[in-house]
Amino acid sequence: MKRLAHYSQYFLRSPQLIKELVGHSSIGKNDVVYDIGAGSGVISSVLASRCKSVVAIEYEPRMVEKLRENLQKYDNITVYQGDFLTMPLPGGPYKIFANIPFHLSSPIVRRLTEADNPPGAIYLIVQKQFANKLRSNTDQFTGQIGMMIGPRFTVRIRKRLDRKDFWPHPNVDTVMVELLLRPEPLIPQDRMPAYRQLIEDCFSDPKKFAKTPRTAIGLPADIKPSQMKLEQWVELFTLTDRR
Image 1: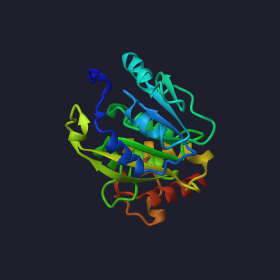
Image 2: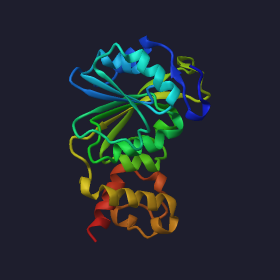
Image 3: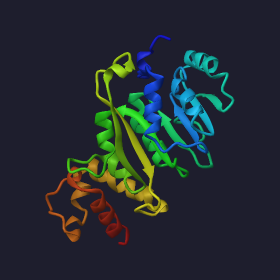
């Protein structure tokens, strides 16, 4: 099927590569797995042999027709036509494994990580630059979204991909990134909205960041939000949340 550019579709070409990528995940035979932006169903078909059930989600109407045709022989795959960003999320345990549209990477990650019932594990094919923004355990500059999700999820890049692994070839570097739900969050779940608001305010408004008691936790007054580590943000929030 012809690529629709406005959906940012770059399809993985090799089922063998997908098997290798799934092999780098924690997905097992008892898992329910969601494939976001399922396309022609190559990823869903590989997942079907590895887990209990798969929910293949596709937005583009013409692609859904092909998706249903390709997956009709699998009795443990359900095809859902619609927008993942507005569909209801499951109430029980689930995981994510998907080659998502690149332009929707941020809203998809935020929807999953901010959900009341988040996935136990998330595996996404994304741009390398975006994956780096999700990481909080780095000595380089840190990103806003990485600090937002850090108290609930650990993040690491599991595999770097070649541009030739896709059709058409993207003009950016891509990776498979893993987000694992922490057994115990660094901040209580009911306080996470307030924590995320602090991060958003400090990254977007220098005046609000300037009013935070950074020196009270041993940080220099001239430090920038992008220079702070996750544990420092958690400590700063805990201090301000008590006031």
